[in-house]
Amino acid sequence: MGQGLSCAVDPEHGLFSAVQYGEMETVKAILERDSSLLHKRTAYDRQSLLHIASANGQIEILSMLLDQSLNPDLLNRKRLTPLMLAAMHGKISCVKKLLDAGANILKFDDHNGRTCLHYAAYYGHSHCLQAILSSAQSSPVAASWGYARFVNIRDGRGATPLHLAARQKRPDCVHILLDNGALVCASTGGYGYPGSTPLHLAARGGSLDCVRELLSWGADRLQRDSSGRIPYAVAIKHMHGACAALLNPSSAEPLVWPSPLKFISELNQDAKVLLERALVEANREREKIILKGTAFSPSPSHSDSGTCDDISEAGDNELCSICFEQVCTIEIQECGHQMCAHCTLSLCCHNKPNPSLASIIPPVCPFCRGPIAHLAVAKFKNSDDPDHTVNDISSSKLRKSRSSRNLSEGSSSFKGLPSAVGTLGKMNGRGSGGITADNGLMDKP
Ligand SMILES: [Zn+2]
Ligand SMILES: [Zn+2]
Image (cartoon, rainbow, N blue to C red; front, top):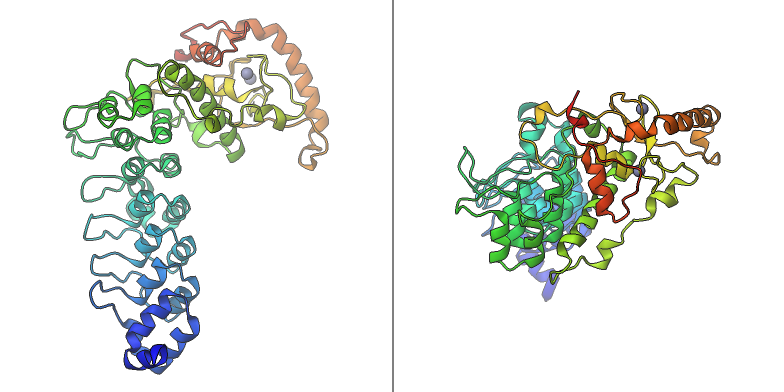
């Protein structure tokens, strides 16, 4: 009775369930008996063995099937590929295996016209999203379609993966997509017609993290959807009060990650992490002020994250001579001048999304007025670190001569900082006397 008999009577069904539950020996035995079963499909949904293995994360069986040279791009009834199913269910090892096997990332399903990237974003599987994006950079798709077009690919209703991630409250995916060139103000309308932006959909979903992330990448609070509503109105309608407070056009603008600047796009990973953290901190401080007095206050887990990290990580580094509050963690490679991440960011941030991005003038070093083309993490003085021993003597000498120069040049240099520094200082509630907010110099070449 039972298993053995039913297997003999209905080997197909036995095969499908063995693939689903990862019973490798059973799968092998059935296929050895009848190799034509390799191409069997389920009766209604037309799922192949690859679909079943991918959706259930059965990586060993998937590998074995791919080794039998099964086409990785088989389609089921709804024209979903095994890669879409793996991305949908967050089966990262299967996603990677299928990508390695040459699965096509540019297939659209029948139902919603979505790609594997849409599915990873919709279901919030950021590791799968990242794997697909990495693969896209080296795949033929990048050459033919262009990477930026792939990141901003539309589904049947005009939604990009960023729209779906924002709507489904997936801040990690929102961040990864923006970091990879997703258009923050893309409209589902297309062809110049009004539609919803990712910010509208985040307002509808009610994710404060998504709203926050989109705003810090320059999302426009005043863009209107097809019903003429700004994101603020959408948040109000769906009763997401905290989101509405941030989206209210009359509340202060957040600092915006200056992604169009060349030296920001070429940042090394460590420097980028420091600056991104500084941006998040600055905007959280700003949020506290906005949300204060409303019924919403930032959750504690967010408000106190990493405030002191710069100092603990920086060891013996010198105090930033712009704000006299934080230690120097960022160095301008051209001139070697150092400052803290907050001050660096204030130099580079513009408060409003600028439609004429091409005309952005890169900021200059506040100490020597030299152009900023490359930023790096400031070298530590700590000689325990083998990476830095070689430069230790010369760099500490340099730093000394620099510090004395800073003192003499300091007072005039501070005027070169954009007003954002003053704003940041105030927002942090620790506005130091060292900064004279003097508008204008940023705009001059
Ligand atoms: Zn500083
Ligand atoms: Zn300099």
